[in-house]
Length: 457
Image (tube, rainbow, N blue to C red; front, side, top):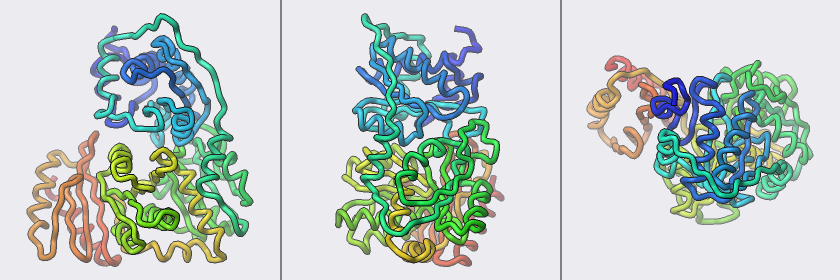
């Protein structure tokens, strides 16, 4: 193996992340690597059949076919579903009962691509659940060759995917005008298939599939990427705006005023809808989610369950507790009836259903679920992350009515506010999230903690 090969151990260490494989194309990720991962994936999981989907990036179809070759060499039956959102691949994994691979770099820029892997029924594959073993086989150059090579076939599951989502969150009532920003990503493929079945007027923005993202990055967590959607909602008098990321597994809402809706508010709304169907059930929320979520879940008779940030932790807790739903501050929403996987489109359908059931505008529909004021995530470049976190703990940990926990980084909680500081797994960054009972309280805590972090770095 040449030192410049994407299968070189040094490169593999860089591209095998906590939950997926991701890097620059073709320097770090290419068809050679995809084929090797496909073979190792089948060998490690002992899979007899796998399903493979891909996004709209130029390199994705070729890498999906290369992965299929590697998997078939190992003896697996491979079904290619073609263009797909990540939640459509999760549907295929659950619907067919097979492990799956999705070729996408999600919201990353055009120069990147990657592979998201799952076991049958969309169970996660991460470093603690098989990804390390896959990396080791690829690094060692091990290839499993079955006596009989597997068959590779194709199947279109887009309609079945839409059928399943619509069965979980039917939308009935008044006709809605819905602006949708696909960001040139995979929602341009899935939104027509799903929303086209509803009695809604869709105002499409950037539905053409284009992995160069010519209009804006397909990352709706960044406010600048929502400006076109906000303008369209205001200009056309839309009832709601929906923004999806590149692989369409995340969804963000804009209300009829063009104002961004906090993912925590949408989490509370969906939790209320799910608890109405199954009273007393458990609801997952990560520790960055607004404290409004556990408050509302408890008020409605449910059981809130707090987790670390990250889909593998949430899915594990959903399995352990039997939770019916989970939400993250980052726009990921997980559903027990969707194999505990996340689906931005299913979250959007819940919002549309709640809105269509009333004559009120979205801002009023969501008002009962919007409490407290959040800072959003603020990143700071820090050399010695542990030392800075220790200084934050020393400065803030001794206050009156203050509680500390270290479930994921450091969380400091007071009756009127809370903040969390946690280190990035991949970059020299500290991430700060703060929330207060009102704007002034949040800003005071945010600014004081941020000043300490940036003075100490």
